[in-house]
Image (tube, rainbow, N blue to C red; front, side, top):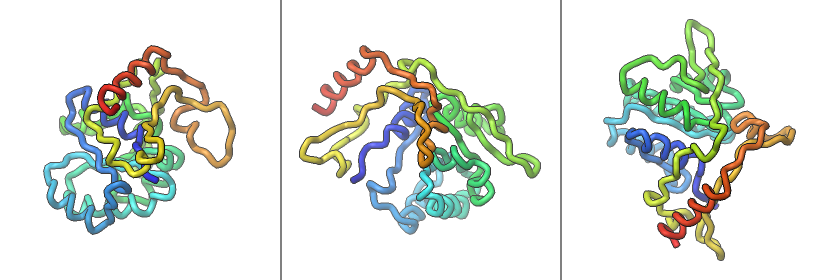
Length: 220
């Protein structure tokens, strides 16, 4: 089943909170293949930055979709983030020539800064979490995490229709909520700690309850 992606929603909300125009294209939900993606990019030539969230299983499809973007919009800046690029940033840049930047770790602090630099016509460099090519080498900037999770942007639930997601329409409809970040465990198969770190961080009880009240207000 396909459910809401909290990571994308937090990034989207961080951009919108700072007055940056943004949209989410949830390819699995919309059943978007490469041909349809090519059509969408061709009809939206105003786009300046296109980002891809990638798990390891998405490597080849992101590689091809980035190539499609550059073939249609060569000036558009491409960036990928998520578990796979965070775990293997240099490999992703090496194997994906159509990807300009990798974003490693949590993005609510660094990604809006990155977008502002790009939209201002600057070459971003000292952006936390950014990985990029320079003079045949890879520059890896340390990520920056928000220690007080109450400072995260509020997810703009009023702009989301959860009923569009098949995974939501179970016998007991649900919406995921993030109350903590960080994981102290050592599971070999999981790259989660590379994104959110080992230290467990918490939202306050009041902050979580406020979100629950908003969800009841907006979506019942």
